[in-house]
Length: 90
Image 1 (cartoon, rainbow, N blue to C red):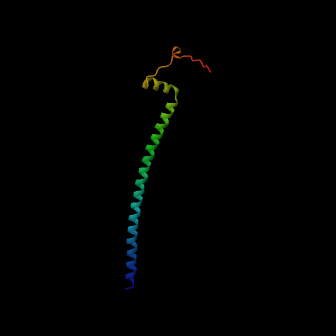
Image 2: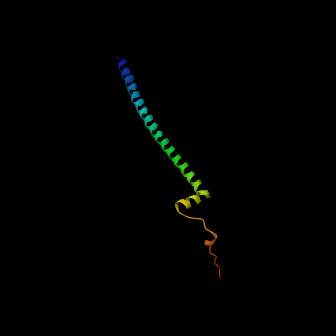
Image 3: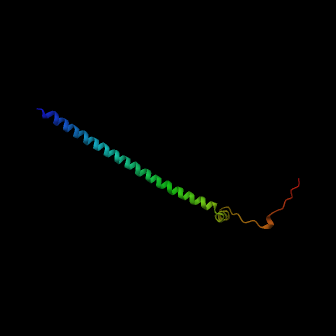
């Protein structure tokens, strides 16, 4: 008769332990999924940053600017005959 409350308490503690273990496992899985998602997003943003950095360096390169102006904007270099002299009368 004295063992019944102890057995009930013992079984109750184990049941609570099982539920706690399941709960903690689901939390670990949930946060693992979030971590994986954020790592994937970080990798994509790192790639975008690298692409934009490469574009910036290409745009600062004078040879690339000249090629872009010639191919996309149909610009041609100026000749000396095209430059007009203006006088500054004040």
